[in-house]
Image (cartoon, rainbow, N blue to C red; front, top):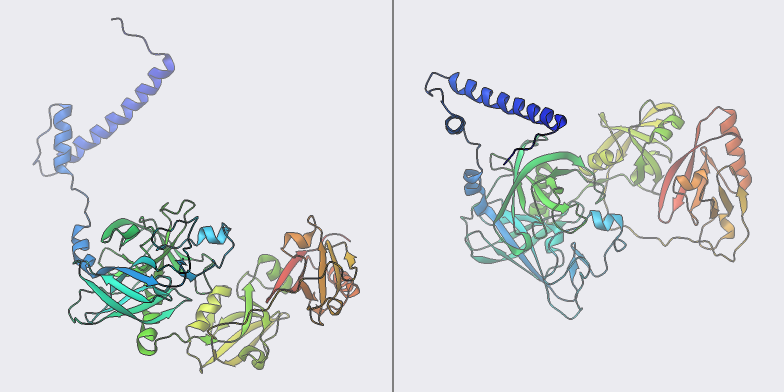
Length: 511
C-alpha cells in the first residue's frame, strides 16, 4: 500500500507536536538522571515511561482524612404533617416561581417524591425530607441547616455506623440558616471541630453528606471564593466551593485537609437542580457564634439600630462628595428606633462602627448584628460634606417585621403631571388613597426615561429630590434646576417602594 503524503501544513503541525513531546520526554530523563544515580538511563521509550512512573511520587489521597471525619457526619430525616417543605419553607415558595432568585437559591433536601417543578404534596399527606448534619460534641450536640428541620414534627438521624436516633431541636436561626439539634443516650459520639482559621482560595476541601439519600458520600474540590453574597439575607458571607454537592447535602460539613469544618453546606447555584460545581457554605466563625447562643439560650440575639440601609454606588458617592464608594447609606431611620433617637437621618452615610471601617451595607449589618443588645456603639457618619459621630444604644433585632401593603395608585384617580427630564408622571400623594400625605406618587413611567433605568416604577412614592422634600411636581422641577445650577452631575431621589425606602441616583443631562 502506498502511504499518502501529508500536506505541508499538516507536516508543520506534526513537527511542532513532536518537538513538544520530545521536550517532555527529555525533561523526564533529565529529572530521573539528576538524582543520586539510582535510576539507570533507559534505553528505550517504553523503559523511559516505566522509569518515570517509578520515580514520580503519587498525589496524596484523602482516605486518611475521610477515615478521621466521616464517622461524625450523619443523615437527617424529618417528617412534617400538613404541607410539604421546599427549601425549608412551608406552603407557597417565598419567591416567584422560576424567578432568578428562586433558581439561584435552590435548596437541597426536597420532600420525598418531589421535583423542582412539583415541590408540593397534598396537605393531608405526611411529608418526609432529608438532609445532613454533623456532631460537634461527644454527648450528641449536632449542627444542621434551619431549612432542614424547620417546622419538623420529628427529626431522626442516622449515624455513620447505621444506627438511628431521635433528635430534638435545641434552637434555630433562620437568618443564617443554622440549627442546633441534640441526640441523647450516648456520651461517646464521634465528633469534629469547627476551624479556627479561614480557608484560603484554592485550598482543598471535602464535602461529606447525604445527597439524594445516599448517606456517607464524600466529594472533593477547592475553595473557589469567599465572602459571597447570594441574596439570602443581610448576613450573607458564604464560602464558595466546587466540590460536588446536591439535594440532601444541606446541613453537612465541608472539611479542610486537617479534618476541621470550615463551613456548613447550605445552597447551590444550579440551572438544572443538580451540581454544576458552585456550592455555598456558611463559614465556621458564623456557625460557632450562632451555635454558642443557640446552646445557651435556644435563640440568637443581635444588636439593632433600626435603619433601612443601601450600598453607596459611584453615582451616590459623587453626589454626596465621598471619595470612595464605601459605607452604608441610611435610606430610612425607623421612627423611635435607636438610630433615630440618636439623631441619625435619611441621607447619612455610616462609614465606621467603633472605629472599624464599614465597607458596605452588608458589612454594617454584620458588625451591628454581631454586638449584644443593650450595649453602645459609636457611629461615624458622613453628612452633607462633614464627618460626625453619634453614640447609639443598641436595641434587639426583632424576630419579625410587619409587612405593609404596597400602595398602588388607582387607574381612575387624578391625572398626573409630567416631569419629562426624569421620564415620570406624578401626582401629590394626598390625592392617591393609601399613599399617605408625604411626597408624590409615580403614576406613569417612560420606559426609555432615566428614572426607569434606575428601577423607579408606578406606585413608588418620591419623598425627596436633591435633599429637599417634595409635595408636588413643581418641587421636583425646582430641585432639578438647583442641582444643575450647582454643577451637579447626579441628583438623589429618596423613594418609597412598598415597605422599603431607598435612594436612587439619577444622572442629569442637559435641560
